[in-house]
Length: 412
Image (cartoon, rainbow, N blue to C red; front, side, top):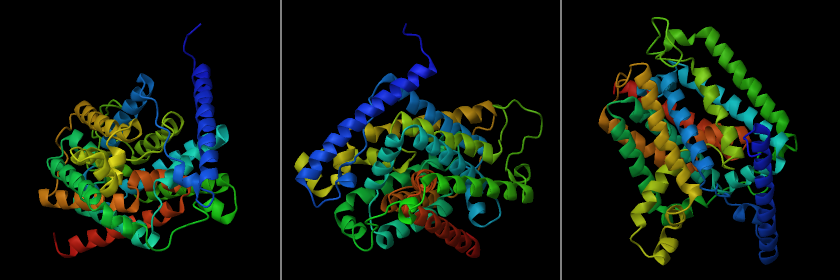
């Protein structure tokens, strides 16, 4: 009997995960013998690419669609809302961000309890892809990312929602993002010396490991803090009073122009579960831009690419790289569908195209420098308790706040 059941589905997922873990363990053991002095766990623990089956494609497509849909409903994608958050004039973005973190942390707790090996693999992959100097890359990159968000009124993943919802200047921000990813990739030989310089975390890469405490303790505390923050903000400033498009008449749930930002954030954070279980990866967006830009080196020889542009060389092919591109494409579809259902397509105001382009450049260049964007560091890294993410996120907010108030002072 081949009938589909959730029990059988999850049983197969566990069997597949166990098989991959055995293969990874064998590979690491061989590497440890060959390189006894190296940190093999992090150097060789690269993403196990999800099989390009219809199930994986359907999962990615659904995740992207939901991402774009809930962002459009939250109204957080609107450039003016992002700028107002950094000036402390609106709390929609922070409400959604806190809800997404709480939901993501809850999902990772489930993975931690249900499949510790999968959780450990996701952690190893996450930090293995992001090892870099704290003061030369993580914090400056986070600051640039925040500055770009305040200037361009978006974030790498959010730009796709702006495109789908018909924001007039979204094209400029998207072009800026691609330019930032391309610039970072072409400057990689010089930037590598910078990102590898200075202090790095060598022994403990996560908060719970550094303090010798349980992951459950800190992740549960993070959930409580995030929920408490949402409640306090909602009491002081109800979302209905600050949303730029209030629902003035009773509406169907999918036809409403705006949802509570915490509800949209909750749905966004829940995407961490299929990302971890099915894709054996975490939520992120910035890599998708670099993957597209890696095609710029397609005409170069393999030897030249590997020597001068190793990052682009590794991104040109491989399902583990291109899944984010598919994810972002379906985010555009999701946002467009949401706006069409609420008859608000093209209603969200944009910014000056120059601001959008420059902001997009800064946010993607900063995200690649820091090793993660608002999704990668903010939603995934923070809830994995990665120490670099804990430093990158405050730097991001610092950059956004400084830029937003500078623009306000210049009346720009």
